[in-house]
Length: 290
Length: 336
Ligand SMILES: Nc1ncnc2c1ncn2[C@@H]1O[C@H](COP(=O)(O)OP(=O)(O)OP(=O)(O)O)[C@@H](O)[C@H]1O
Ligand SMILES: [Mg+2]
Image 1 (cartoon, each protein chain N blue to C red):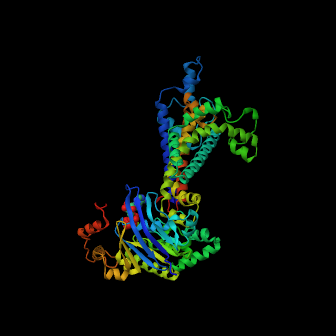
Image 2: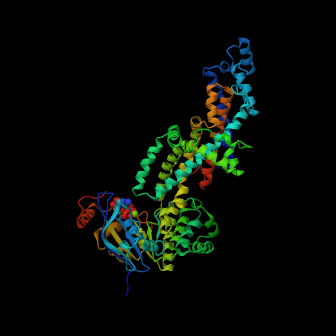
Image 3: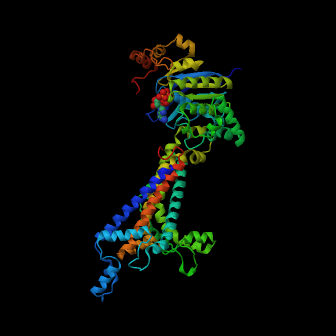
């Protein structure tokens, strides 16, 4: 019996803020244990909405109008709050986009890194401290003692992102949702962080949902990719296949378009307007959404 | 704030006080009204008046008067009150503690009440309670301290007389105090009857001064909390299973408290100004009440002393607020 870790089935959602505009259109995807799945698409494609739905943190202005999200066979959308909060932060965790705003400026790193260990696993102070040191070592932070005692503003962006990664993997989760975890970082730091996420994921056997704009990042870290446009899945498949033999014209156009972090100066060919016209016709939207 | 920052601030404080001294001194000599005319008996001869004027130094030129007065001030000698014929410093020393106790009580009340309501409002956001609270708070924001004072006199003094209407302590209690900080002293020496009576006298003026502050704290803090509560670090802490109350108090509050703290400092200085009228309404024997008497009597030395005292308090409060802000914000007040 091979039940996927996550199965999203026909998920649809609308934005009540934008007058009921569709945000997700019949999205289906499955995620196996230990798999790294890229979610790609332009701004507003619905990547973060899927990520938030998985974490149970959809804004009140986004309404799910149909479909299921099954995690180990259990429907997350229909789950009582109690059970949901047991899963969130333990089995499903988040690596946020901006390490600048994801650490509390007024609390020391130790307090923030051990919150989950103490609240979810009931560890004592000393035990949590030891585990925190281990974790920082695991994400290759050299003087973990000093870092634990530091405030976020004393650390670099890359260092903070390492801490957030340590925090996301601290409880050996089954799924880590990473919503553009490198976009706020320098290109050189980006590479290190990508490698680190991959290494942590392999070491812990964790599945990762990796949200990004960047096909170069996808090529580097993802086993499989789901490409979205306007809340609709356009193409879905193994990374290598999709990048070398794209099935959809939008995919090929995107591959040609770049930019990619590993080839920042590659020729930029904007996605032709004709491709968007075809996409909109397929999905059935009259106006280009702004 | 570094040591040199602090020195800088203290230097500026001294300059500011000097400025206040000059302005007060000049203003009071420009406004009409002769203090001597108010203290003499109708039968006084012109010679008597001239002698009195000479006694108080009022026959000298303005710069000379200022020079003499300022040298005295530096020595801690604020002169003699014309209306009460007593040392100004002594008079202020007697009255200031009453005002400080009242102002601090109102400050503590305003900040605590405002803080608790802002926290509850933040916990109740996205419920019907939230807009209701904002509406009521909007009304409270519009009511100034003296209106509260009059309303309280009517409500808790006249219609439903639960609290004494005036004064600081029941004179029939005949408690002897070693200091003028009655409230603190009675608490420390465990004189609970006196303490209770002092509190009962203080409640109405404290509410009048503290309610406007509470309303301002509610609005500022709630706004800042709402902003902090949508930050990623709060989201992460929520995912890790932190309770809603801890999310507000531990995650959001410390990052949200900055604007409230600064504003509270400003409001506190306004509140000290507010004690003048509120103390008058409740016949509370503080510095503010004495200030009104001093003005009515054109008691120049006393007015100068009181204004300088108020000025010193304003400046001290501002320095204190900066210090607390720097301590609360580990990035340092300069960058926060
Ligand atoms: N808080 C919200 N309330 C209502 N609608 C929202 C909200 N946030 C986003 N949306 C809408 O949902 C749609 C998808 O947004 P989403 O954030 O999922 O896009 P995204 O693919 O993550 O884009 P980006 O690359 O810019 O992060 C957008 O059309 C947006 O207008
Ligand atoms: Mg997004």
